[in-house]
View 1 (tube, rainbow, N blue to C red):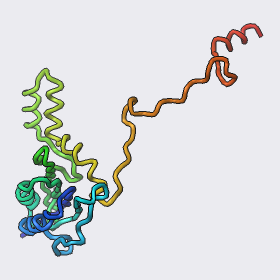
View 2 (view 1 turned 60 degrees about the horizontal axis):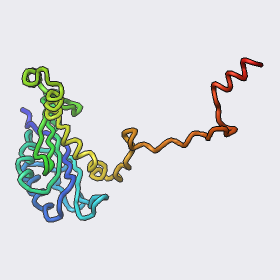
View 3 (view 1 turned 30 degrees about the horizontal axis):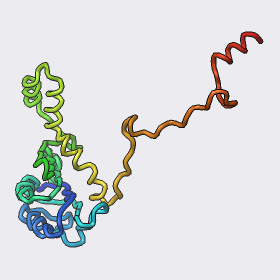
View 4 (view 1 turned 30 degrees about the vertical axis):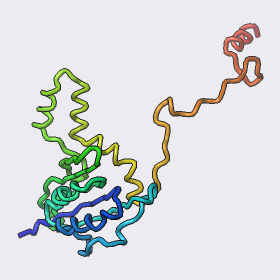
Length: 210
């Protein structure tokens, strides 16, 4: 009989140093350990590269099935703690008996979002749920889009994405222009009469009399 152990990844994106012991205790209460069976320690944590007053951590975990949900219920009670945790879609010691996975995201300003995931981590929305959303927003394209965004946790992704590189130990992404308004202005065109300019009408007129 399988023990139904599970696995996943926990990202603490932003936490005050004073919360670290409470997070570690919550991890222990959920039955989670590191892959080698040990508990997270001080070496797990580092200052955020974009804010050295905040701490972050990324760790793979092993534990009983449902551990991610238990951890979320414990951690979400703490204000000013931003995190996400996944639980794989197959039991670590029973890969031939796949089950759905989970992904949970918590942002203080938004609360907690939870979703079901497949084997590669994509969020899954069931047929009946989709039908209910479509029925509730028939003829309302904007409302339908918002409802689907809610199901997919789009707002949580938008809030967490700027934090993820730092939590993973990378430098924050440099901002890039994502619209014409943000893009640099093109160089000015050559002034009229400039030798480098090209007046197509004048060029064709000269070709016609050659």
